[in-house]
Image 1 (cartoon, helix red, strand yellow):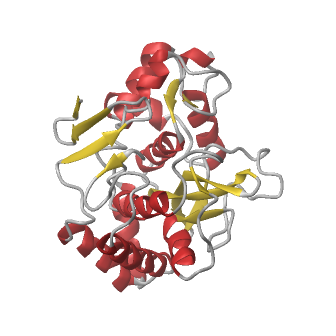
Image 2 (cartoon, rainbow, N blue to C red):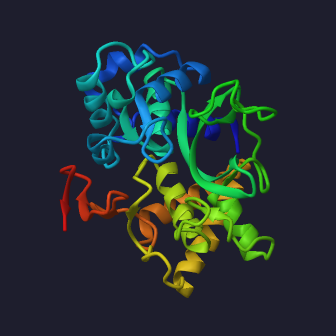
Image 3 (cartoon, helix red, strand yellow):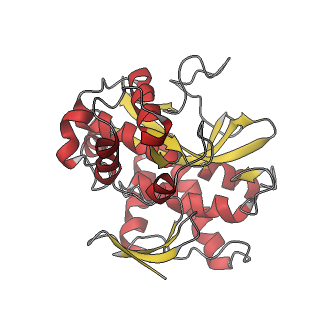
Length: 307
């Protein structure tokens, strides 16, 4: 990719998306230094994982998981406790969320400081030995390259893992959805150990396929919830159609090429996002919340009509 193209692309990621825009909480976000360890402290102090937090989530925290906009997440944070985002909070005062929300807050902080940043969807091998959990991490553009880090992890959490500059590529501690999909399609993995958690019904090719499309959406600055659906996505455990496999193959190949600096691949991804109804997100998405609710979300009015 040419220097001018790389600069232009990085500039796009320095601007807030509707999802990362902090709104009335701009000062809270701007007060966090734009470096991974400071972001880690703020993200983990503000947001508790609804499935892996220190304490069982409250009813309010379970409802929080569908707050897709960072401004709405910070509304709840400000209502429950005063002070900066990195201040220690009681467990019940944190906002319920998941890796997507930790990473979106990180991106919001970085973009507020003018640092190009984006979220990436994939699968992490560093939580449970022998299993890759679905996960979202952050990439920030620094020194002419994309530096990948996990805002849920601090410098003391990774043992031999460099948590603030994660290596990339197939077989790395964090594989992008595209890398996992291509490895599966080329026969190197069956994806049986990729998914939400060991023993969870949502594992295997279906979730990886969905994350290939989800990673495109996040790359296009549409940082949707992990349980949103659109385009050619289908219900869990249904066999993937030939058309669904075809678009995932194409997206995964282009994503890997774009990650390596291929400018033409980057343009092709943008064109698919713009023109291909199998992959693009329209005004509405379906939302299958982990709370058990199912609804349709209007991304313009920011309202979800629950069934």
